[in-house]
Length: 111
Image (cartoon, rainbow, N blue to C red; front, side):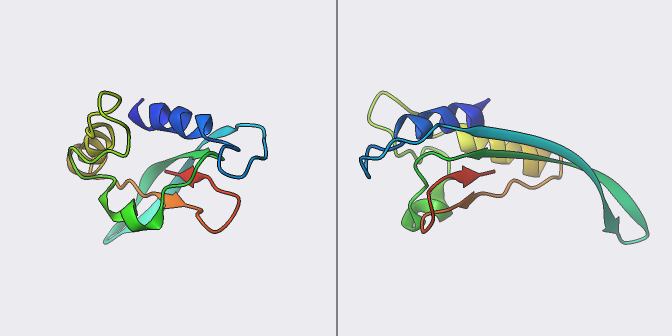
């Protein structure tokens, strides 16, 4: 829910910087895959959440999973949403959460 909430916030900024309006999009896909794991293959689930909103600037991308780091104005964000997502995926479920933001293209971010 934290990622989806951030996705919606990013879509609000579509077209503001360039003056051009484009259709806001969120794409969610889920797929099963087998990942080799030492002695046997391990079944994995991949969830991809993509938005075509405002991308995450490259200079802050390495900080987005830090607790209390936020780009939102005071009173709008706590900086805990993505830190919680990271903790749940990486520490509780032994999974991975990866972010790719497309700063040099038409914008958008995927988790």
